[in-house]
Length: 368
Image 1 (cartoon, one colour):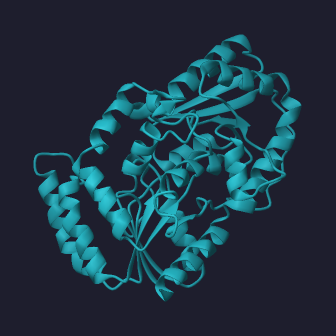
Image 2 (cartoon, one colour):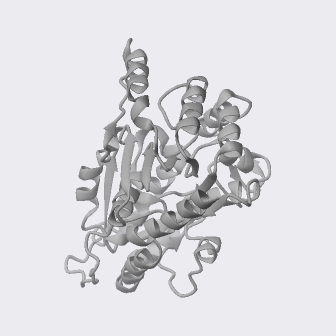
């Protein structure tokens, strides 16, 4: 198959491309590298935000259009798959529809179905937009509601979702927003992770300190809950200076992020999530314990009945503090949690196995 993956979220498309190439498929990734994270891509589509940046970006995009035809599969990371206003994306989406066989939309993050479902139907006990029946009112949540509800972004998302040939979701929370609306064409496929060391085994700690990693996106700290997680971690570090160390990293490229992550024992990530994200999954593949989203619904969706590697927290500072403190007070738990973390990735997120699920999904669409 000839496959075009457009856009990037946390290395999903770049990793998937590697898996698809393993099966002999011709794969092109076109993206901006997910901004400062700078993930690999074949066609570099970075926009500079200067006086003429938008015009240059659009000109480059239109020059590229002839190369974006004749694919069996075109997969869009999000309805806003380009750094353009929604109004300008419509004609490019129509072009891709006309000149390629099948178009797939990913439910991987911020879009109208996610925002609207969490704000109205509220199928999740907590999310980026609600805590129980109460809507969140932090600046980012309000901004995203304003951006997506009753706007051109909403119209674009609805048009693509209704017209595309298939929808693939990557986390439990996104699946419950898309699957009820499009039961016939929505498929859940886990995120792909390429393990650095497939034969990893836990080693005994020698320095005594538990190293807890937290990655901060400066622009979305409150929205993702990392501000609350960091506050709890720093308070614990003051209480247990000889037993734990907080490693804080802010908005760095992926290669740097990986280097700083290595050697950690646990990662604090995604306070409002039911499931581990790409950053957490990458950490788990290295034998790093995730303190974050590990709700029962996640395990049920993937059919996991044995492993419970994630230290699940509720979206409060008290819950983060308590669960992290229990790990500090009982470091003997670490080896087993680390072992389960790596096995969890092997079972559910290995990039070759995930790519195989995508290949089967693509083939079914092409046979229709």
